Image 1 (tube, rainbow, N blue to C red):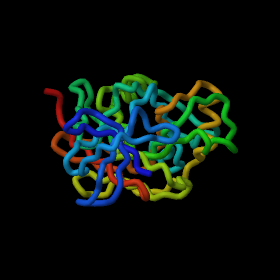
Image 2 (cartoon, helix red, strand yellow):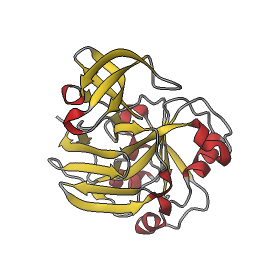
Image 3 (cartoon, rainbow, N blue to C red):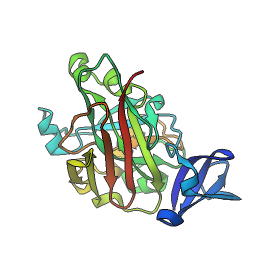
Length: 257
C-alpha cells in the first residue's frame, strides 16, 4: 500500500494511493494510517490534489556515516556503532516544497536517504522484531548546512533549519529495504548512486539501537544515512531523491524572502 497525505478540495487528509500515472487515485483514510486503515468513501484523482509530507512525526532520528564511502569522504572512520542525532519535526516539508537556504549558511548540501516510518509505540525492540514496528518507507533529503556543521562541532543547527527534511512522495508499506538503489540528482545530473545493501548498520540494528535509548511513537521517522557524493545546492536548482520501489522526491531550492 502507498500511504500519503494530501491537500484536497475538502482539506488535508491521509490517503491510500492506488494506480499509476494519470489514472492514480487518492482514497481518503479516516483518522490515521496506522493499524488497519478505514476509508471514508471519498477519493480524488491524484492530479487534483497536492502531495504533502506523508507523515507528521513527533521526532526525526537520523543516522550519521552509515555508508563507509560517505564516512571516508567526510574525513572520518566508519563508526563501530550507529551514530544518531535528531532533526526537529519543524524541518519536515513535502514534495515540491522549497528548500530554503538560510542567509547565515555559505554551503548547504543535499543528502539523499531512505527513511523508515514507525507504525506503533515501541521501546527496547530487538533486531529480530524490528519489522513488526515499521509502517513503511519513504524518500528523504537530510539537508545540511555543511559550513555550520564544521564550525559548531555538532550537528543540531546545521541540520535543524525549517525545510531541511523533505519527505515523500508517499510511504510504501510493502517493501524489502535490504537492497534498494538510491540516487540523488540536481537539475537532472546524477550526484549520488548507491544501494541500501551497503549500509554499515542495517535497519533492524538501527531500530534496536535507537529504541534502546528512546521510545519511538507512531509516525516517527528514522533517516538511515546518505551514501557518498554529497554536495552543495544553489538557489534555482531542483534536487531529486529516487529510491527503487518507492518513487521520487523532488524539491526546488530557494533563498529566504
